[in-house]
Length: 127
Image (cartoon, rainbow, N blue to C red; front, side):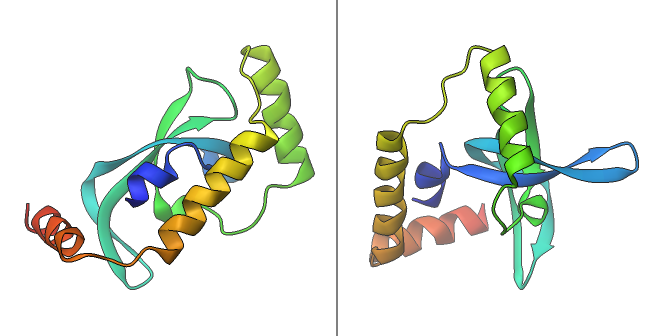
C-alpha cells in the first residue's frame, strides 16, 4: 500500500556533493529492497527509495529513508528542479495531479488494516 501511494510523490533528499550534503527535489519512482538492513528511528528496514533526482529522468538514485528530509523544499531547490525539468523536457505536476495524490495519501492514512494486509507484511518480513 505504502509503496503504491509513495510512487509519484516528491521528497527533499540529501545527496552528497564532495564532502557536503545538499538537498534536492526528487520524485519517488519506486520503493524497493536495498542490500542492507538499517535503522530509521525505532524501525529497522531494508527499504530504499528509487528517486528521479532534480527532474532529470536519467539521474536515478537509490536513497535510504534516513536521507529524506521532513521539511519543505526551499524556493532555491524548487527553482533548480524547475530549470532541470525544462532542460530535460519533463512536465511539472499539475494542480490536478497534486490533488489526486493528496487524496491517495489521505486514503492511506485513514485506511484500516485488514488481516490479509498484516499477513502480507508478515510474509515480507520473514522472507
